[in-house]
Image (cartoon, rainbow, N blue to C red; front, side, top):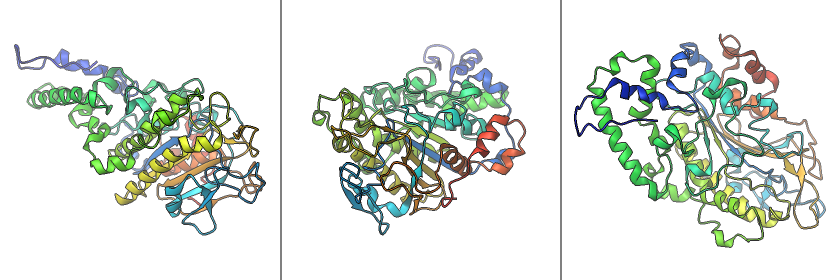
Length: 467
């Protein structure tokens, strides 16, 4: 726990034992003792790491390929998109009609219509699973890049859940998998989770609600006073490299990256999805009502925060709201038509805002966006207008990162249940992400990287047509 001594009463000198309590500042489980034990990758890191970042928007629950990016309007009525289709910027390509904004930006990103996740099990396999050594993909990157960005102290791996925006949001759903898992690599490489409510995650006060802004001002005032005392103190000069890095987490204003109040209010408004789905418009018949509400209330600002983090040097940001893309039409989940209103419209609004923002900032080569879930949905509608689990085909959207945009990769069969061209698999997606972030040739000759990690880097093939 960070400690700030009250020097208004007594000595103005910061005691060394007080300063050393910064060891409790554990970003992603990285305590000071662990930081001191780590060895920097050194000069080879400059060649190994590319100057790029990835935002992985996990569409938890399994989005339908039909109502998103492959409507199949020539198929029978029980198969084709229940929301109809909309023409896109790419001639001859249509999306589900909910994606009005994204359709106008289709030349800026690419769609994969032959993506296969392998099974119809609810889990988080595209971001944490057997193909990722049961670690978050961001933890794979963090194991290569180090848990903190040298020179700025920015965490290299962050996971954003609704509570990073609203303290009233429901906790992240973990029964289908732990987004913060670092697998065999240990707690040092877990994603940093703002708003988690303990340690640095509480002390840095990263959330946005007005009720917490006063606390943030108090914290920043304390930090500013503390910085001035530390700058004048001989304590800093005797610190180790990693003690200095821990101090820099505070001194260099890493918490500012998480602070949306520093953005233009007009831009915040453009991202904001909270007005699209007032809670009173969500039927009480769905047990998933609270999650629908949290998704709509926070998705846009989560993506805005993700962009800010990438600009400040974070290499990998996981974004997931709630378990909202499951559209069975049962007691828990709405049918496809209603579900796309509840979930698809906030997605369309938030993702299009992110793309426009990145484009306006000239960062399209620097930031890659991946959008997918753990599976797709069944080709045939069920009796209640929902779609059931389907592992044979799933939607995948990729933007930026210096890849080739404005195209559709692969083809699906007429009924939309499996690929009609060479399947793109999870290892291929991981290879594409890691190709964007890391020089594979340098990784193979870099000392200290685990063989299991190197195997993950080479198991799949970067998606042809994108690279």
